[in-house]
Image 1 (spheres, rainbow over the protein chains, first blue to last red):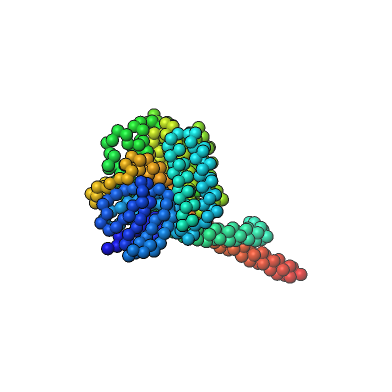
Image 2 (tube, helix red, strand yellow):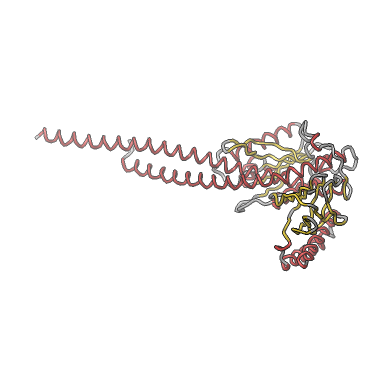
Length: 134
Length: 293
């Protein structure tokens, strides 16, 4: 049975279609979502979303963090940015990682909330670099 | 009676003004379409964000550690007003409506003994408030020269407001903007963004009673979600205001074009009358000259 998946960014609806299973990068480990999943609200880390039809991966998208709402019928991903893996660019990803790391070095001097946010940004940037290698 | 030459120059100048206003009207119409599409595209995210926020808010309700972004600081002393205006004029009463609403709101709050701070978004609003309420102005942001509003712009405002709240500089924040109702009507809207407004009556039931599990816990998610939700509200206000601006300019320029047309008609009539009067006068001079001989 398919579950309806939606991926939205603040600027537009990126994807909306039924899939058999979706694997989302939740903050405490990847999470496979099938139809009938228990209702959850999860925070996402930077990583890839895999869309399954049957037992094949049909699409892979990179998200740089966000939130997901899971109910038995649907899975809604609120992402700031979602890009198909094929469109990622290694050099851009590495430049962003470098920027995130220097931002983290600055933020570490401020309060812990800023430090946490910067750390997440570094992690997301690193995941992006890894995703380009995949 | 102005001379024929003066009338001719007058007609020509009104004609060129009319050309400009009608071009501006067409530009505004195409920008309006783009702004409407953009506002439409932002809706799904905002709706889903709201749904999630409502579920979360319900689950931390009453908790003493609820974050100030959601429940406020507990005080109601310092109000931050965020008037959103355009960077350009020639849009009818679009900008002055916001200016007036902000001024009235500020007066009302001050009469109640509260402190008012203003963060002006858009150049026109900043200029107006600098004249009227300069001492309350704490900052301004403008996107002049930007082709397209992006979410990061709204995030920038959101971060500033969150920072002010965290530093204890403000207790309540309200955004004042023109809501786009139709091309000819923009409604000045005052929307409270901090503390987060309670859900509209009768809509609380549509979370369908689902009890969510949270990963990680509610408070960690809320701490991350709330600034995002704030930015989204600002983003929507900015988009509405952008669409409203183009709508208002379109209407204003349409009126201006029509007025210019009326004026040209009237001036042409005067011109032709004066021309005929001149001819008649010359004829009379010739005839009476001939009779005298």
